[in-house]
Length: 386
Image (tube, rainbow, N blue to C red; front, side, top):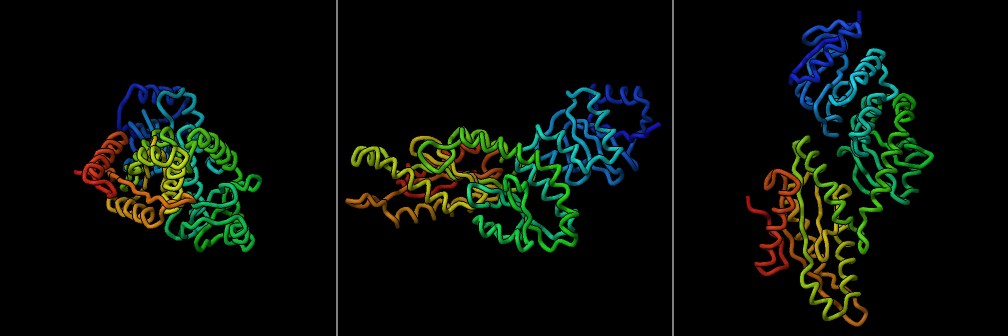
């Protein structure tokens, strides 16, 4: 009779149903933790609930965010199932766990509907680091003819890699190509101790998942692109901001939002015409994009307003970027061919959790700070009040 350990942190009718089903399947259910498989019934996945004993965990939860799933599966092999799934799904998951069917990333397939491309990449990187014995690493994804760092630690600089430079790293064995058919990205590891074939095997099974998530992101990106500038649009911000807040909360990191308003655009349109106004907006977006880090996100909120979302950044860090952007724009007037136009902006800064407790509140606080900047004379950056 198969033995399964049982830990019910958050009792629920779904937990009772699963326990009855286990008995019906012929499993011996033993209260508490121990070696082997553990069923953990909880409200949501939480790394603090992972016991010291147990080889793998079946999480039977009411809800789950991608960041939570990623965090618990990075620490202990297992499977995360929502309690609204059929009981038979739990039986299948336990079977895979007992067969140690983790090499094929069966659990990853189960969580695919919960995970973003970034979450899948973090899992892939964590597994490569673990199997290779490396000290750290990073993954760059391809966009057109350049590779940009998407996930990783501070082992490598975040500088973009032109395709020839990335190809040379692969040729020298200093980087490894992911999904070669599409040249999805490259993996770099710091001082790996194992041979490449040992830690690259897992990518063969993960490749379809990564490609699917990448293609989905690419198709969404088309609908999230601003029609005029290099920025993403407001719809993209509204989709990505809640996820960014959840990620910041899971990592206990700050998240800053810089809300920008181009000063006197209406006057420019009246004096010089709307084509010049459009050129001004394009110039602001290009300059802002150039000053942003690889993992910062630039959005056109609407009209003359832009937002920059800055993960892992405090309000003071975002304020410095805003002041730098203002300085660069003022020092490099827009060339109109028959003259020059000095560009100025006002900006407001707010940060999670310093000023706001959620996505909507973060936008509201940054907007209020922007309003103060305009009221106090424009051409300045103001930080939200606590």
